[in-house]
Length: 259
Ligand SMILES: Nc1ncnc2c1ncn2[C@@H]1O[C@H](COP(=O)(O)OP(=O)(O)OP(=O)(O)O)[C@@H](O)[C@H]1O
Ligand SMILES: [Mg+2]
Image (cartoon, rainbow, N blue to C red; front, side):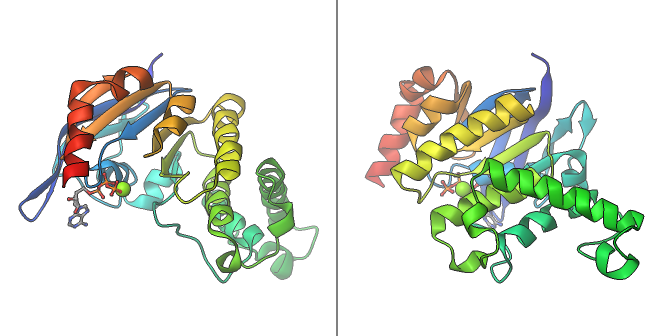
């Protein structure tokens, strides 16, 4: 499998703290790769570097062989990388449908929700808006969000908000999806649904997935490969079973429990 996303020698410090030191990884097309490690290991920082929120001081990030480090977040998104956030980032006062439509603004030429109102129902702008709405409806069906489609997102249960956020990322039709602890705070049933959706997102839509997750059962069920970080450094790589029993990983998690 050829690498779709390549991270090479990534380094970034905040004040005196090295958040990442010489971290490299590759994500192959069609792969589900999990990033694990104790709190503060640098997992979210990797996502922030890839998605353009942080500009790393060292290293390169390439998508399909083209450098993306230093690009601003909307440019990275336009190249085909979408993400969800550890602390859900949605427009809380807006409905599920409108949050997903906003996820499509990258693909919009005529602006958000303006086509029909400004140019009439037969205009190219209105037709474009209809296409976006169709795409959003497909995602709503896929993620089983019909019941909450018109509800204000801020009033939805936490687990449902996480699914809406996944939907907003999918609405961008990315090639690479970065999921930061998607199962955190979910109950068992929600986690089971989420696991199947993530599998389908990979298999049916051909989207490659980089997944941060603390739930090792969840990681073991989903991931083709796992990379473990600790104190900003890569300490292990392999299958879920290999990484779970890796001595450095066991030591890192023991240290975290003692702390
Ligand atoms: N913007 C920032 N300013 C200062 N320090 C930061 C910043 N972002 C990250 N860090 C530091 O970098 C280190 C790694 O943080 P990061 O959020 O990447 O960890 P994580 O592996 O995602 O942890 P968790 O499992 O708790 O989410 C931590 O020491 C954190 O305090
Ligand atoms: Mg994090």
